Image 1 (cartoon, rainbow, N blue to C red):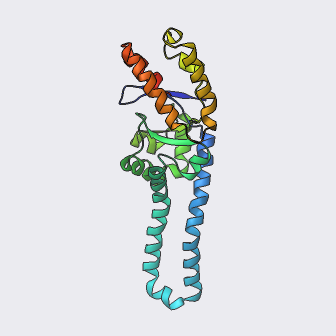
Image 2 (image 1 turned 90 degrees about the horizontal axis):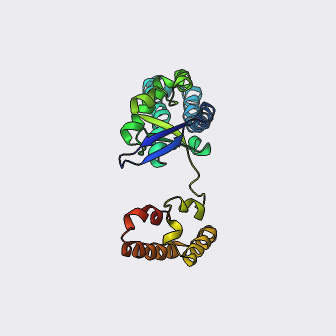
Image 3 (image 1 turned 45 degrees about the vertical axis):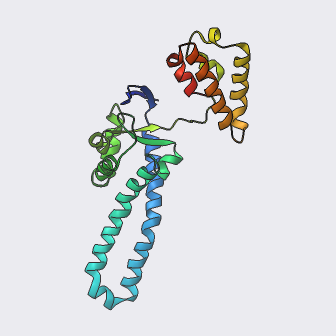
Length: 230
């Protein structure tokens, strides 16, 4: 499991786990199968025209072949762009394997980045060159990733609950500023919030309470990250 630290434009350091070759290949296989399903009606249509409409094929075979190639490229190339932009860096295959493509600075993909990385997938990486580069690259990149400045990372489970013990690490003076009643309230909140239908109101009340408290003590900036974690 290889990790990579990225400093975002907001000057926040974030650590990501880089996707392994096996998981990326598995995701690509799933996406290829889906593309195959999309291409199948096109292939069947061409076969039917060729088999049962000889005159039509003879008169329009150039248009049929040209149009089919355009549709094929749109499916093979456009699939990844549409998926990555609509699913925030994921395709159906990547989602199944819990992977995500992001820019090297930690930000989400734009149309330009997705178009560049997938253009080279179509003409270079699909011939096995990409797998070789991923294997030897420190950042697990293929040609498209290098040119688009992107990386593929493992999607972290964001539903993992935050514990009171983890929050205590935010500030070493936690016990000094927090009463026993407040600590107990927070403990109950984190233990029960995942089972609540809607905890947004309670969350907002806690934010207001601690914002007012720390603002009055003149330490709001120091504790802002704690409040954001609620």
